[in-house]
Image 1: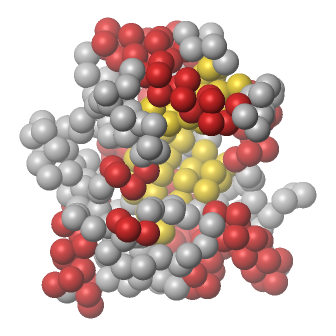
Image 2 (image 1 turned 90 degrees about the vertical axis):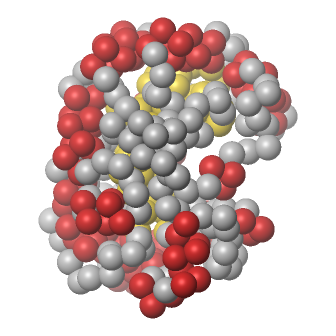
Length: 305
């Protein structure tokens, strides 16, 4: 392969047929793991402040948020086209008619050519999938599921509210309707520090009909239950240094099928929200270190499959 792993930017341009940029949208959703339908308190690591840009405020309409995002990116790239990224909380949690109205509002914004919808695997009823399949025939559509781990014990320990069988079912039903499917996992959750964990995760996820995957390192965020758990029992956690984590990611890549597209490998939460300081690396700096280390190891995606 020309590159040592499949890169999201290349895939995205090929998929869209032009340069596109995601713009995050906060459409005012909540989460069934917070309001009592599935659970309360949410996932132990979760604080949505960590991934919402400043313009993603629910007092602004979806249209206003997208226009502000366009103004930000358009100064540098005036010909850019956009994907509305429904990111905060669970963006398929509601009745189908109101959900579709929100998606359609986004698509009416000039320059928006598609949607990325972030959600949970236990919030994708067949009726909504049928509507999304129709939408998929007239715009770009990527449904992105929070998976976090394939290990049911770890999912229970972080109060995720679903098991891996639920993930498999949602991904297969979505891909079965011809919709591109993304996933998100976290490396370093408590209980994952065992020799076979990365290989098992990579093989299980590679067996799913996922198109794209995001990998993030565990970050301990202020005002979360996990941060309090760490304060009380730090011995239960292994927080990786950047070089350790790079080797972990490379191991993951080597056990991953070659067709899987990797969007990113790290998350950058605002420093003021971190209960434990981060690495101080920007995404491109981490990627450069990763690629250098892959060359040193003569590693490539799928090598160990």
